[in-house]
Length: 396
Image: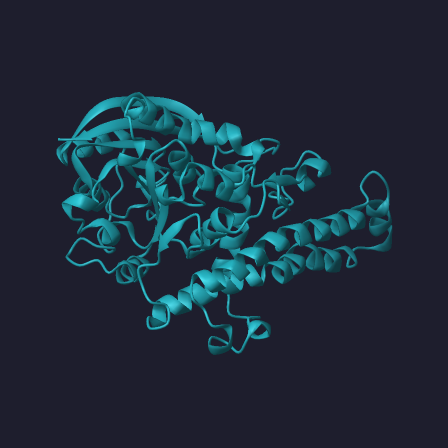
């Protein structure tokens, strides 16, 4: 999954691992099918519903300033913009993941029905996340989430003569923006990500974009609810706000890498020379069914005296999962032992902080009350706001 500017490690052979290949091809197909699925769900179905209305009601909706049919035409054009990015991700991921189109479904034209609804929804959320991580408009949210991490690195290591000797791991790296920012600041940065959608999208933006502002995206068209104006609903943004490859070529391409795979499995057996000085987690720890496993892995991957910097809420992702879903996750991640995907728990913040110390960390900073959204639309009539906690913990 690499070109010149970013090293990557898939951690498996997609040509021999049937389950992994199935998951990859489903994710790939969902990017390929975005255009068709979005037109069907966002405009075609609404046109059908519109023409099912009585003629007097249709006439009202055709009038200015509503112009409902014109709105659907505008949505179609916005979908076309988004599809340019989605299909570019698809094309770059084919090579990055070593997929032979002819041997995995009969060529491009046969990729018409192999994506699940879940995967299609992940494409929509990935497109929206570009707003957060790779647009000028997302800068405020990035600063709220990543700013404390960058400040802590500078306070601790800003005077180090060769910052590249400081190795920083970013689990749950998503679209790779924090990993890139850390590398550009001079450190050696490695992102780790489990989601194929995120890996494919980060591979494209980091390795294959040709310029800043290359794509126009409309991140908020996937829902018609809670928009105060149609202009804000349809508004476009430019991504990426910077050109990653140019920055990395200038600062040193060997300082950023991305790895694919389950966090605990990927980092449980590191040798002394492979360990990290810093682990930076943002909106990550609540993805754990078993937080203790995460804490043990973070402690193992850090050098003695290594630093763990965290920011985020406690939205426990596995809270509503059934036993069957837990067992599926356990199989997918390869966990062994009695406490795996079938053993889970959810803690309050004070309990999490106690557990961090029980697992061998000394808390040096804990700051609560920082408010942020996650890929939120600041113009929406409905806003979700998290109150995140920032902490710095040192491995004892």
